[in-house]
Length: 183
Ligand code: NI
Image 1 (tube, rainbow, N blue to C red):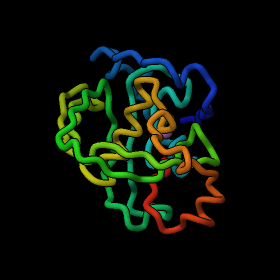
Image 2 (image 1 turned 90 degrees about the vertical axis):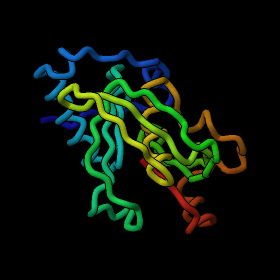
Image 3 (image 1 turned 180 degrees about the vertical axis):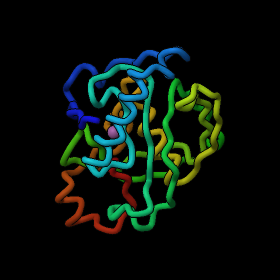
Image 4 (image 1 turned 45 degrees about the horizontal axis):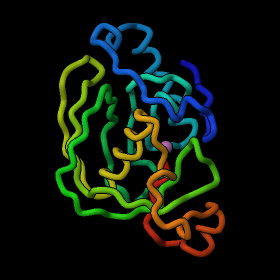
């Protein structure tokens, strides 16, 4: 296993649409090893999600894991580890909800983003089996933030009120207690 370097905003690979993987690719040794590297990298950065483009690999693969022992999200509902290939996202409830979002590829900053509060995600898992899950509330934001990375989007593109874009330190000083989701 190896920890990969996370690329940051300004790197063109974060702005590319990633390519889908074939079933053979998903089940290949190379990709299964890559999943292990992503797990290790996510843990090293104390993240709750990571997408392949964030380590410079433009393939449609993202991991999401809100662990029980998360110090940063003691209140957050726990999830199992999700390994998601080739996702298709359907909005089930257009009602939006807002969270302050942070991103490993945009370190030191945080911004308020509104997103649909309930979505369905159809995807392939590590065995290339079709899965479908419905996520809402906090998890809906986590999944949408993460899967945006596979389509060249960053949360900053979705900030509609630029007065709610902040350095993390100032956020902690002046907005402490407001709901946040820092990848
Ligand atoms: Ni991110």
